Amino acid sequence: MMTHAHIACTGCFRKPSRRAVTFALVSLLVAVPLMANPKSVSIPFTTNPDGLVIVPATAGGTIPIHVIFDTGAGLDALAPSLVEKLHGKPLGEFSGFRMTGERIDIPLFVISELAVGPMVKKDAVVGSWDVLDKWHLDGIISVNDFRRQPFTFDFANKVLIFETPKTLAQRRAAGRSSPLQFDDQREIALDLFAQFLIGNLPGQCEIDTGSPSATANTRYMALLGIDKDSKDVRKHEGRYDTSLPQISLAAAPQVSVAHPSVSFSNIIYDCVVGIDFWTGKALTIDVGDKQLIVSNASPAH
Image (cartoon, rainbow, N blue to C red):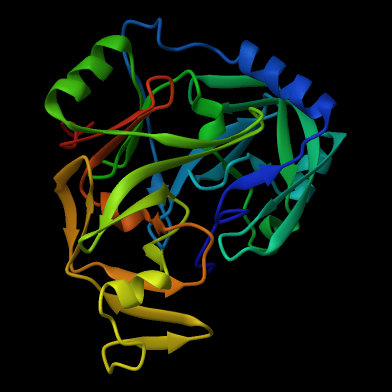
């Protein structure tokens, strides 16, 4: 099984065609708005051996699929065999980079519909990524679908919750908040960042539910006094694996993980915070208000 599920660990697809932008804007406009609903909706999710979130979805209105919900993917992607089955219409190409700087080119297609729970996108723009067929996966969805819909990963109860204004206010009142920053590629792709403390050092880190654990830029090793040749550091193909005293959310240091496993590598960001940081917590993403909220898990559903 793969270590990283996402298309580009940075999630950053770039230079879409003008036609691709038009289709993306249309699909955002026709997405069903849920914030007007009086009650929140939730759907269960499962996890794979790496702890990555897998949610049920529907493609083309009738085909049930299971997709990885990867906040670091930037753009939705489906297996080429599924795109072909859905009679996807070619829409050019989108290029981006993995967190290691490797370029990746993704063909774009338009499919009639992509739905996750009550969220429905018509004329949805998706990438076609051949690795998904090799991994026997249907696809990946990104936070790009949730620009107007706050949502919560409840990792304790394994449910994805579509928040309403009332439930979102309750999350804010009970939880700890942090500002979000974005890498927004013309509303085609969207990645999330927040300020964290790596050990005791600040860093702007990507929030990536497609990574099992944290990865930090190798420059932090010297700053943190970590010797690459120490017996506590494991070396593997240019990567250095060890543990830190803690990683914490800068705006709410009490939201932290003690002695996390961290990989140091030559990545293009300060760090990437993986899914293990959120274990047992409820993570709410509110793109519209540029805020993440960490709260206690909801009562069991």
